[in-house]
Length: 596
Image (cartoon, rainbow, N blue to C red; front, side, top):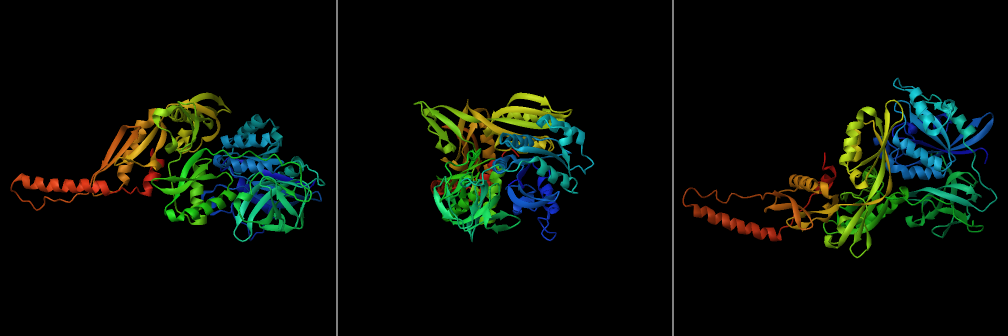
């Protein structure tokens, strides 16, 4: 056990952690030259295309120092705020963390948030300055930022470059010297924490775990404490580039177990594995359940694909434990699922993965957040969807979730960022200069205001320099109104939204204008209206496609033309009663980009 080191890599998005992980794998000869490729641990096409890590990946390396052999278990983690749940799970399986900071950009918001996660779990932090080979690196300034943040000595900070391989040997030595070996009792009953799982169509569900106490052998009867299910360990082993079977896994090891599990509900991330013969008394205190921030409906384009979509969602949830979903139905879209995501990027990635990995084309409704609605009878209702809102006459007040938003930016962009936050109903809480030119601004603002396009706007205002991180601080009373979109008097529930009264008129007007562009012309007039309760606040009309019935009338009395037009008008009226308006999929997506 004293030769095992479990560590993860934490950093802000695009600070070079996947590239540095490649160098560590090459230096320890874990991957051969033939297998080497950029972002070796990012094995999803989406990750490579976008240059981001979506899943945390575990891999084992062998390392020799002063004649002693060590086993290093590395977990590479995502940097984007939407995937912070992946980071928290990786941290639960480690004793140390490499904190990587880009020497050209300095400390960013997500670096701080991931660092606090690691400190809460008592991990040993090894700070690393990455991208030191770039001419724009500013090591002195960034070293000051790191020493201020974690209170270490400047000589404890390692310099490295993921691109050239500079400092990789020093990092590996520091891991061996500074990261503590796992603590645990090899003779105690087995206790292993599940921190991830994947679905394999041939072998069933494969769970990844870290052994805290005891050991597990191939062929052991094991029990999952949370689900109370028992299985036989068909295969146990370690995670290399591929899975490598081992006859026994001991305390401190990180590995996988295949036990022929077929249904996804039987594996819960954060569960504890123990043996049936000698069970442990209590489960490991895992990590808390994920709290979704953004909700949206996902519906199959063809309603017959509902069951197929359900199976795809189950398999996807195994691989991404932060996705939550429950069945729901909509008058406009049929049967589908109400899904909870950690943010808009997470929602986009899930949609993309459904399309690529399961060949499912889906429609996603307008994203929104959860609200608490208090009725005049004193009932408290959780509202995930605007259509669940009771009648306005029965509502006493509505509470919406508020967040603490932390933005780190260069001083020159403060004006634009302040204006953006204030238009999103933000309240400035604090502003402090971290170093000469870098400012940390803290705002309290409604979560509902940031789920649309806040992040994109922040990036464009600050030319990509500002970084953003947030956490929910509770619910507060707000003047919210339910905005309905009506087509020829019929409400389209997939387009309704809960919105602050001060923004309702403008938002309703924009949606109506957007829908007017997107809804194809019919044989009759289509009225597009935005309404709050019974009050219409905006209207646009898609004019009918008309045939020129008076073309054959040359001269003569006007009454001939009038007669023909009256006849046409009656026909249009009759058609309007039987005709229905098809809303194209583009219209549902357009609402997301309403402010572009």
